[in-house]
Length: 181
Image (cartoon, rainbow, N blue to C red; front, side, top):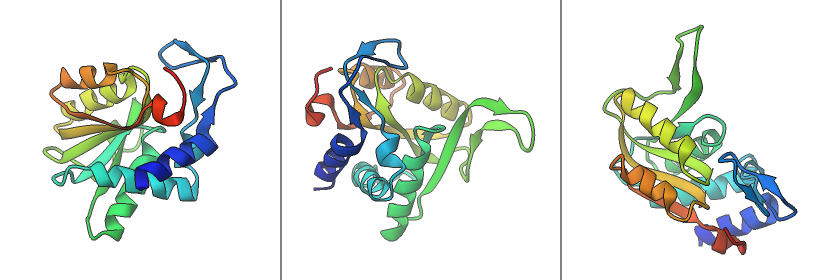
């Protein structure tokens, strides 16, 4: 039921079919998913957090990924987990290291040996999430799984994560949204 609510929210609020749109990968598409229209919306964020929490491996203690796309998903998931008595943490990976304060790219209450899930809103190749995963591994985190809200990669993201030994879970695909890849 939560997955259906996620699909409905994405279709109603985040899906644009008035392309062409140039994607992060450089590919051009007739449709675009602005997932922040869902992840930054109160009701949408709750649905996102619930949907991710439902597929989260039980040993995961923290969720996060590349900053901006993964941040609202991680916070929403941690909040849903708290509602369910699960002390889940959220973290973020900056695109570049900060040169002031404590610096670095990894932000949040997580450290070496923590079992984590890498999150992403929409994936075309898995590039941003794989970059986040590589940095998380460098920081000593143990990645249990990767989760994408929408996977438009036709299996490429899963293959890229498989090369790192990380299972990839896609909550929705373009066909769920009524569009073609």
